[in-house]
Image 1 (spheres, rainbow, N blue to C red):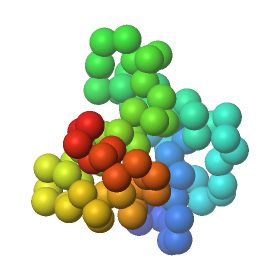
Image 2: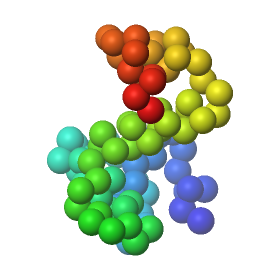
Image 3: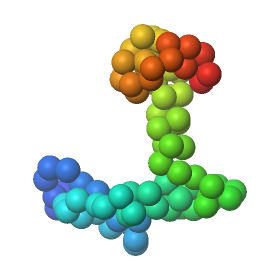
Length: 86
């Protein structure tokens, strides 16, 4: 319901399912994965980091058919073998 109230970039605050149209600092951003994991009732939600989101998005892209070259370019990996790790 809240998404219709804003235009442009939206940021999830992690509090009471609120969205705001103001930037988040690095300390706020780092807490979002933990909050998301807690919301979906994952075990050990404190272990989730921003890198968890990056890793999950890379896996989803690979599962959806992204090539190794596309993944390497998009994620900025220096090692061309990194897509095989997924």
